[in-house]
Length: 395
Image 1 (spheres, rainbow, N blue to C red):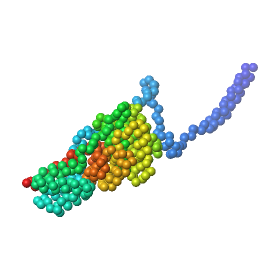
Image 2 (cartoon, one colour):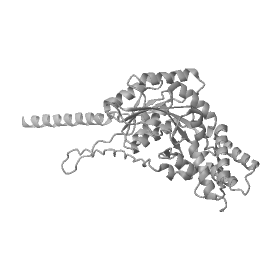
Image 3 (tube, rainbow, N blue to C red):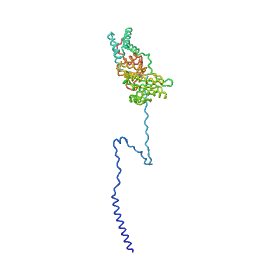
Image 4 (cartoon, helix red, strand yellow):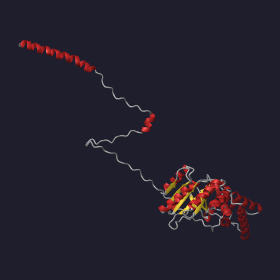
């Protein structure tokens, strides 16, 4: 009985081993599960996705996620504009081209041994070439002829003093050249800036803002030139440099609406001055000039405009007079800012503008720097035109 049991156990063992031998190879031949496909992205998808975002690293010691420190952008450094007092004196060398006409040419002619009719005609020609204007030139020359004859003046210093006095007199030093920028009755002063295309209007508007800030005024700028988005961006850049706020609207918005909102914002913020930049326009375009008149009327719903500054390009010469005349009729120009005066020999346009229109030149641009806009002073201007040394001979 025992023998049969042992035989049965042996057969059972053989069967079990055989079964294992058949099953194991099949398990080994089972195919491995497919690997996950690598995600393939196009270049366009990668550009849209942006750079990969790295997960915060873990502290090896504690296993706690460590967030990277937040780096705050540095606050913009505000610029401090140069004081306006004495700017014209500091910038006098920029008038070198006009100095050649007034200083070297005129003083050289006046200091001749004999001032005959030919000499006086040359003096007239020099003044007319410098855009002083025919009427003003005749008055200056007539007064110079009389005074040199009566006084018998011949020394360089005396001739220079006589010419300087006549030029200052032609500029009418009695005219009010101050910018009226002080607030009144709880409302800010409003300055409207107008001009033709290409005169440097928006840039000059930004420089006027620097002049006001340098004189201690708080300023808001209104970007009412809504035809060019770049104009509003440019004005905003100028304002940001001195910490001033800019009020702007969408491109193509109604300029009068933007100007109105700028003044309203100035009232709410309690600033001293609101400076409104308008779109450049040609003086012979009736529709655009009517639109400028609308801007003025809408702004005046808040109160009267304190200053309307016309930006004139000094290099345009006598053409600027017609521009000034039309703008004056539409918006009552109260002052002129002459730009690019450093790039012309026709500095006499300052005299011509005032003689023809009775509008004082209040600001002059003498360079491309941010603080190269100077308050106009007749005596300092004439002194710069004539230069420091008067050519001629001593008596």
